Length: 226
Ligand code: SF4
Ligand code: SF4
Image (tube, rainbow, N blue to C red):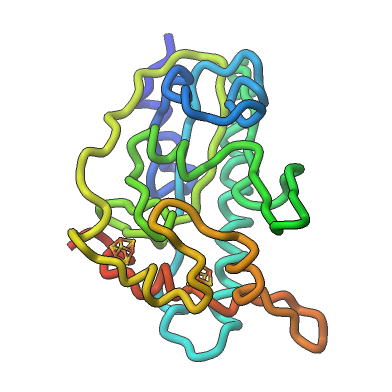
């Protein structure tokens, strides 16, 4: 018998700040080819989790701290994902790990549009970790949008966590839309091409930096819902 509470506690002990379960039947709106069962046929539950991204790099005037430490947190979430699948493998639970960020296969070059094999933002929402804001980021009540998501698909049924019913956005707020230098946000999606053209920057030495995080940083709920 698998105790969901024990699994949740174990995943937090391994390093997650948030963890929730989404039964696979909640993914009815996933596009064809990007459903959890398109990745792992036996999937019955999507376990979504997250680690906090430190807020201090947002105070820097240089792009370097945010770019660098954001990448480290992505790698930490991938390392956590591996620890979680190792835990499941040891007790013979079938599972598949999902990358926290790159790589993915789907790419439409004309509009510089990429799509992850599974939308972690939607998985996080369906697992009760937060709600999507107009900046397209998942907003958690306690940690705001400064979280990096991960997921593991498992072949066992786990009771789903409650889907969030609080509002992620402040009524009539559109700070993220108004502050985006590219006008890339429409309140529902992001124009990836417009965002990438501005936010991804290559230094002369060849380092790739993220030089824009305004839609994240300027959100009044960036660090939690007030
Ligand atoms: S990262 Fe910058 S360019 Fe991209 S959507 Fe956010 S504010 Fe706009
Ligand atoms: S800046 Fe305002 S509209 Fe944008 S995500 Fe945050 S609360 Fe929502």
